[in-house]
Length: 118
Image (cartoon, rainbow, N blue to C red):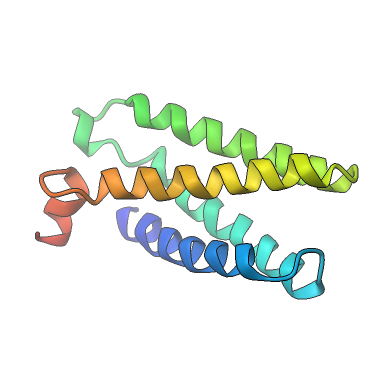
């Protein structure tokens, strides 16, 4: 599961950054957005199965997963209702949060850095 989580995170990072730079509302922006949502589901859902770092239990990081799912759903609902600013805020916030979480997860001495061997 950890490799799916990491691969999906890499895809989400690249697509999310690209989408923030694209012209908003275009077919490409929308397509990248949906693929980003799918990639983020590949990050969030497997994270519930990654519990080795906490003796097999859920940790506070899993609360961030629930929050991320809530934010993505809110962003989708918002854009469907024409609330562009709300959509943008939740999407940018989710992207920034993912970058911060990834930076902490990849820090030396953390569980993932041990798996990756650095």
